[in-house]
Image (cartoon, rainbow, N blue to C red; front, top):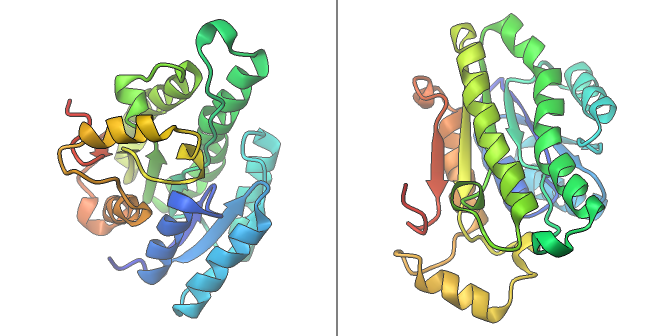
Length: 248
């Protein structure tokens, strides 16, 4: 994929799926803005890998669940790197619990990090995309947002909300040359999935037709395609990258 002269902002890109996406876009020639909230060491490691491969990037700390932080992030990225062409909303967290025992902050933190952040950063970046009449917005949801999961009502709500938001926005901005799509990963071993028990992982593996878990790169390749010129006639879609675990 050729992303030369493109500026890509990837939220939550200090590790896991976000880091893989940032590396893939950089490998295609994009100048990548790496965003992290607390994992500075991870962001620096991702940046080093990109630069070692000949790519360009810069690191920005911001809590994108805060609109002020998100607006400030986009402002400084556009000042230092240029107008954002590709936005990947990847920042996410989990606070699993059955609804009967879920704490208020367990709900609000997950909704804030996973869903509010998408609104916050997208609204801030959208004006520049509209002016240039070109843009790619890819939101990283989850198959949990499609099928649900016991003990994850907060997470499922945030990821399902992301899908509805993306479809509505795709209708709003399509005439301006901006596409909005969703990638819904299946089970990909990352820090967010470390809380799963061995029995849960084995059961998930047994239900996955391709018989393996995903790699962060599997998600990154799908995102890179949707960010490319070749996906210019695709918008408002949800691409499940899950080894066949959830077939809709």
